[in-house]
Image (cartoon, rainbow, N blue to C red):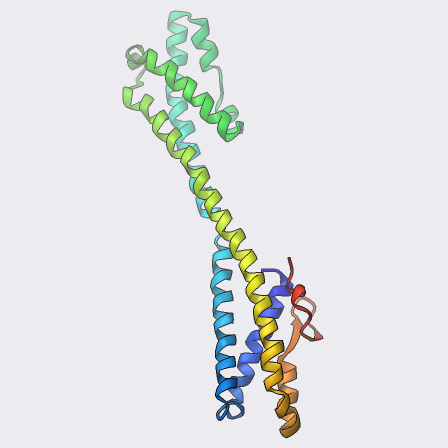
Amino acid sequence: MTRVQINLLNMLKSVVQFFFENSALIMSKPALQAAVEKLKAYIHDIELLEQQQAKKAESEIALKGETKTALIDATLKVLAGITAHAAATNNTALKMTADITKNELKSLRDNDLITQVHAIYETATGIGTELQTWNVTLEDINAINTHSATFDAKDPAIKNIKARSAQATADIKTKLDEAYNFTKDTLDAMMMPVKISNPTAYGQYQNARTIINTAGGRKKGTTPDASATGK
């Protein structure tokens, strides 16, 4: 949430708190009671959306990093065997295939890394029997393929989390706008008789309706237009 949105949400909570502390004002007014409950529901929905928005892709990205490390480690073990076999057979083509470092693998873009390790996997599969002399088993070779598939599968999961977060961001703005307009059009109107019958309580209500700029510690007057919730 943006700072403006947080400030607006805090104002809505302050309004609910006002009615909690001044329950006598709404005790005999079912419509006003219902309005306060509706505002509470808005706040509840906004807070749930905020939790969804906060769920970034960090956990999936971290897991993808671990999977990438496992893929590179598996590839390096096979590359060591290919390098040894190429030296033993004086095979220039194999030497060129194996001529890639750990840092070079780590620096490749995801798609390029998958392409590169697949080529190494295909090469190793073709000389699998010979690589056993250099302590590279069939399981070691297949591990490249397994880790590659796992690594590649992480992208959709990360994109899905980011998409859910982006949708929650849009939904927060919509809900905040609805909650603000409801407060302005309904609660403010229902409180107008209190302005005459109990000016002190009405003044307290207006204080609750004041947005506090928590970043600067200053009051900004009554709530702005709904567009102020941010884009």
